[in-house]
Image 1 (tube, one colour):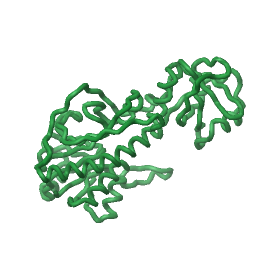
Image 2 (image 1 turned 90 degrees about the vertical axis):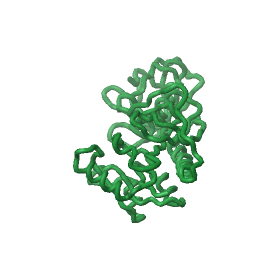
Image 3 (image 1 turned 45 degrees about the horizontal axis):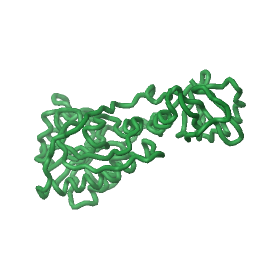
Image 4 (image 1 turned 135 degrees about the vertical axis):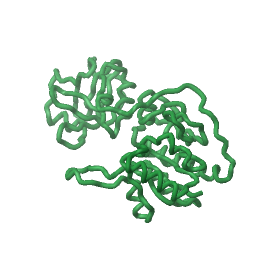
Length: 313
């Protein structure tokens, strides 16, 4: 099929690469405009734009898709000229307006990293880890006017491991989901895929805020563990020590501490830095103090000479 691919961040690159290596023809890429990043705050193209440029594919970077704007008019004209059969979407980051939904015969097909209707929204991977789900997956569905509500074309499931962070789980789902997205394009072209309405309980996964990533030490140890892993690496789980904001690497669950620990209370020996929770303590593995790089927790504790009153808040 003739495709226009819509996507922006690194996980979308995997899907674009698989489509480029398939029998389908990617005639253009739709992505977010260049963004400032790095210490110099210079403009950089999105990861998807970089791959497309390397492969000599046309890149479209509208600020908005809304009708009545210069960018909106340009996109409507160019999509009509390109005449794609389908527009696969992976983490594009722009709202697809209703009048654009029928621009391709097979529509816009989104690869979403959950088993819909579970975890509709911007952060399904983080939500699944935080909630303690044991199974997640990826779903290919046809975009409609709702938020991740369109009919399902294909899906694949994958277990969530006890050590998964948002990063490791997203990488795995991007890999599995990208192959499934190619299979979905194959099935649409062959006419062997039937769309089915979403069924089952719905849950929401809104965009993560920095405040969401603050750790509540009064929660059970398992909840603390999941909360840290769900926000690793971004935006990064954090806590306060006096007036310093501390970032946290994933922790290890402990059966018990040498002495009882109140929620947030710290206890360090030569090898372990334990923190109290609402149940059993957890062991810190890595700490990132303000303005510093992530370091082993034991090294951090020795460097600041933790006292008996030290406590995370």
